[in-house]
Image 1: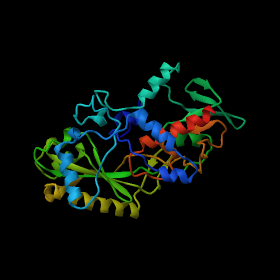
Image 2: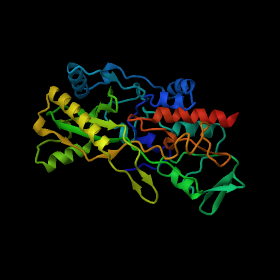
Image 3: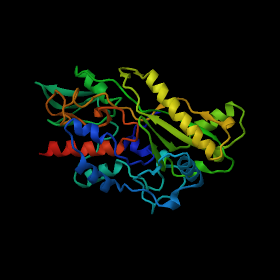
Amino acid sequence: MRTICLGGTTTVSAGNGVRCLEEELRLLGIDLRDEFVAAEKKLGVRCLPDSFFGNGTKRIMTAAEQLGLKVDKMPKFIDPAKCNKDGRCTSGCPEGAKWTARRFVQDAERAGARIKTGLPVDEVVVRNGAVNGVSCGGRFFQDDTVVLSAGALETPRLLNRLGIPTTPLFVDSFITLGGILKGIGFNKEVPMNAIIKCADFILAPHFSTQLLAEMQKHGLNADSSDILGIIIKIKDDAVGEVTEKVVKGVTNRDAAILSEGAAIAGAILKEAGVAPYTFVTTPLRGAHPGGTAKIGVVVDKNMETEVHGLYVADASVLPSAPGAPPILTIVALAKYVSRLIAL
């Protein structure tokens, strides 16, 4: 599933504002401490009040703690004064409580920028080793600075057309494990409102309509309000490839980490009162495509490619799979590269 719109996938995110890959980026010479602070302030990152934790999430948190696991509240870029706690964060918040990148676009418009939608970039135009602009169908926009932020699936395609080699894809592979707890109403709760951090994966309360479909396949009698679930999201190996097709396999290591995470998630759900015979899992999916224009390989620490004036500022540049929501880190990187360009 892909979301292609103004604001990108921030429109359908769960609103999670966690710092990730901070140390990995520092080792590459990129210190984002100031940018993280500025991004957290701009996005309004905070943990939600206790009243925003529903019965399902609280059961999962309590059960995990009883099993000796450390549970933290998930930092969110959600305004509690506007949130109506209906669980629709990932469908595009109808109340405008969740920050999305559209707000940056609105800021730019107020500052005099003109936003051009419905104009997919076909090609980055280069003259004498320096960027000259972009081509959009029959239109050409000239500039000596171009920032690619098309995401880790489209940015590498634009780079490949220039003959710039790209790097393998990771996707933060994940499954959701769920079972039946009648009348829990978990489907209407703020998603992923808590986080359990493990070495190579995270666990978080998570509802998926695909769980209901899997239960129906197995003849289990339930509706959406009866499901309690936990997402297992891993730092997967970068073995994917983006050409005309997107191909991403599962390594033995990936499979072992997913199995470990699922075992822990199952133990938590059982402790929370879910009968194990009702357990089902969603199909394996990828949450956060990234790594296809890796820092230190495709771009330098200024996020500039071998083409002078051509920068990348999206998940493509991430050095490794975060295994956690990367939006805050991407915003911090964008602030970092914007500052360098403006010097």
